[in-house]
Each structure stands twice: as structure tokens, then as C-alpha cells.
Length: 278
Image (tube, rainbow, N blue to C red):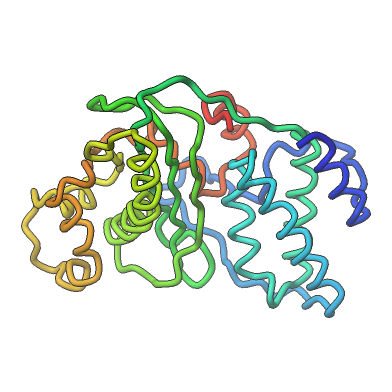
């Protein structure tokens, strides 16, 4: 997609940044030495934009969403967070769009690298609990093709998901399970397509980094106060019983879905870009 980002900058009259912007979004500062890391106030009290300003924000979000879905999945968390506010955009929303464009100036020609595999659909699922406005959680998934190993080796993304969930969940385990539901549902048409192409699919392995979510879908925990969760998300148990998916736990540091759920600081982006190519 050579020249696409330059065209976007020209279309919206955005100048080249004076200093390199390594983070596509504003991150929450870490308070060193504090016993608890409290999130910042998410209330946006900046002046609202007029109709022309809102249309500009919507145009930027639409243009970057296309690029992010195609080749630059590291931008998905930012685009989904801004997209949730674009209908009632403010000066703060526009500033977030400008920071996103500044970051894209550093990576105008991103690409995806794929490795040869047995064409088995795999995924990493993750969620960031109550990290967005109105106490909402952010769901993310890294869906890729790999081999049918106990822990499949990661590959370039077949599909990357990042979305702010509409419901407000009562716990991190519930949010992680809801994100797992969305990931598994997105994999169903991909599994069907691969089967029709002649690549017979075993149980699709999906990695999570939350033991409650993994225990819920594999029936290895005793449910006491999770009746509402069981009622809404029982589809996952059905799919596991039918042999469609294999859910397993692994460390969060090895979960590629984490990149699409949190507003990381610039240092994180610099350190993890090589391991999240695509």
C-alpha cells in the first residue's frame, strides 16, 4: 500500500510531525512506587466539534481503519477507541486523531510476513477489563494459521480483532470469557472456508491468559456465582463439547491478542513491534 498514508495526510492537511511519535494513542502514566495503579478519569470535558469537525474525525477513522485491517493491526486498538466517540467528537477526540496520524508517519509502508504452516486456524484471545470510557472492556484477538501443536507457533495475522465491548462486565474473568466468545465466533466462518478448501480442521486451538475463562469453558472450575455468565456464554462450552475448539491457558507475555486491547506506552511499542510484525 505504497503512498496510502501520504495520501491520507494530504487529504486531511496534516503536517509531518516535528518529533517522532512512537505511540498511536495517549497512554496512562505509570506511577512508580504506588501500591495501586489507578486509571485516569475518562470524562472528556473538552469543547465539542462542529459538524465539519465531526465529519473530519469520521473521515480519518474510516481511512485508517482500512489500513489497519489490511496491513497495520497495531493501530486497531486506537481506531476502535476513537471510533466509539466519533459521533459526538470533541477537541480531545480530534487531538487523538492527530496523534494517530503522527504515528503513522513513522510507518507509512507496513507489511505482513507469513510463514509456511499446516493451515490450522489458531487464535490468541485477550481482554482489557474496564479500561475504556463508561467502564467498558476492550476485546482483542490474533487469529492466524499454524500447525496443530500443543502451543501453536504464532504467524502473521489472518484476522486481527479489536473492539470495545458494549456490555459492562462484573469481573476480569467475565470480560475475558466474553472476548473469547467473540474470538471463537469470528473463527467459525474461517474454519468453514478452510474445510471447503480442503484443509481439514481439527479442534482449533485458542489461547487465553485468564484461568477463570479457561476453567469456565473447559468445566474445570465449580460455578457458584457465575450463573449469568453461564447463561450468556454457554455457546463456548457447546463448541468445545462438539470438538470445534480447544481452549488452553498460557502466559500473558506470549499472548499476541494483548497488543490489541491496551493503550501501551511508547516503550512497549518499540520493544514489541518486532514480535508483532503485521
